[in-house]
Length: 360
Image (cartoon, rainbow, N blue to C red):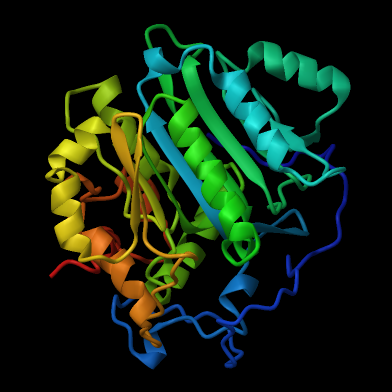
């Protein structure tokens, strides 16, 4: 999965990727992210930036610099490929319905060397091919990370006997705050209700463009951000492969990467955590629950938590309780070590320790 801009790429001005957004959780210290690799949470071991929302991962190549990673509010859903056949277009349309009017869209498809603008003609080709091929979309060109992104493999893929079974979507991190938070909840609920996914989460995360060299520039930035803001999910596409591995190679029980602000547990996941009654006891009245199909949607508060290691907040308790309650169906380790070991000096054991950061 290697993609790098070719000589034909248009020249772009270096960018800091900063959008300048206000947020009540703003941090006043303004220094660069530290490269300390300890998984501790003292003042010297965590990122010190103006605002967590301003964090950007950058990649420089051939004299050009792109912002290739940024905080976002992310959706991750997982299903079983045969159940999702014929649903690719429905899911893509739902993503398009989220975009503000007039937002440009760029795609990276088979053998592409840079993100290209979606046109009327290319959209027709994409829709005809979406069921059997992988595409990734963002709202900025070249290899710059946009405010919105979408990746999905749903249904039958072009490889024989291989099914696609996951969806990733990112919207602006500021949508976690009112008035957008309720719209985000309804959007997540609609995916859990209308598609046969067996599980999913919505949480603050770190979005990044497609391409191994760009991911290697972005993953360690997202991970260091997550060491302080412990409800922010750092992204490694290999952890998605680790979750999907049971269906492609060997039987293993279904898992989620972490708890979310919103967590959907299908019937099997719900049974493996002891059912609704066990979750009610574990959450002790914190958060809300709603039955969706044969599963349960759990919301840990009105807005997504950050779980700032430096500034504990009583509002984080529901998320922490939820994380502990679903330990039996959480990912225990990250994916393939070839990517993990490229996380800017972060070791495999250290990365795996993050997955258990709230466990007692």
